[in-house]
Length: 226
Image (cartoon, rainbow, N blue to C red; front, side):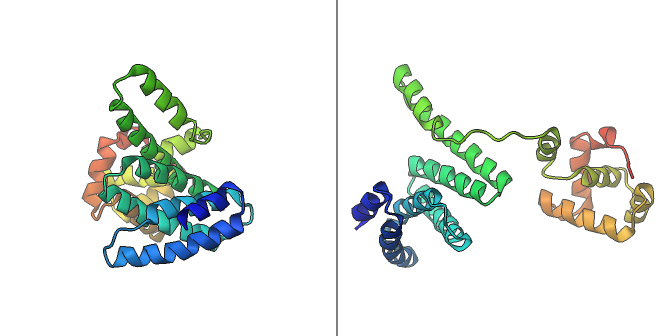
């Protein structure tokens, strides 16, 4: 039935392909639960590819495809199936782009590129090596342009300019009240910024923020602004 689903997808019969894939995926999910071998990685990839070709895919369908792909990636990683893991990262990136999750998409594409480079290292013949890179990199969508502000935000763990200012003040040993006074905002606003910083950086203490800010040079570069 997998071959039938792939044939339907090749013929652009999305409705039939999805019908067959969904039947098989239900069985594959049960196999995952009882620890049996499963075809979920193959099915998850096929389903996502079909949905990406459809212009009428619903948000629910895309969300389910993402969930299946994440499960499929775990299975493929456990089996050491690096080429499949790479394909899953690529498809996840494309699905994230469709849903305007641009930072998540960029991360998936970066992970896919890392795996491609690792696979290429195992190809001793230079001609085959170059051909492999040419063909696989052609699967990537065009890189999206990133503004200088977006690039700077990425460099600093996703922190906004204001959050970086707060982090710099924390590194200087200032309290929330002192930071609020310096930035002409309410103390509760600073509390929110601190909470966001801790969450984005995966920290649980102000001392970690302070050390991070010093390491990033924020105490030298950041200036308070209204």
